[in-house]
Image 1: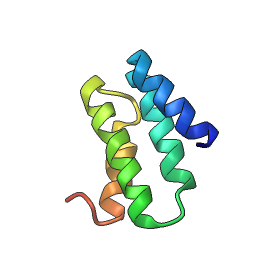
Image 2 (image 1 turned 30 degrees about the vertical axis):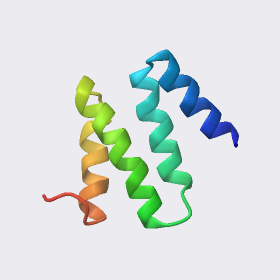
Image 3 (image 1 turned 60 degrees about the vertical axis):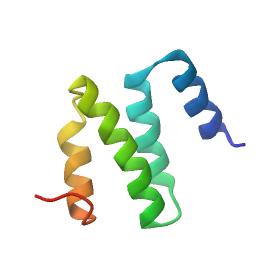
Length: 71
């Protein structure tokens, strides 16, 4: 397990939803392929939606650009 996996698990365990947005975005940014990146972006987007996070629009725009969300 790598450091990012450990931080994600710890944030989930602690209920740190705002931190999960950042961690899933980091996971997307470091993913090896577009499918993996979009998987993580979707998770970040869902947590952002739940809390009206400031990164919400950016995450949605990234998913639209990847063809995973409709404009």
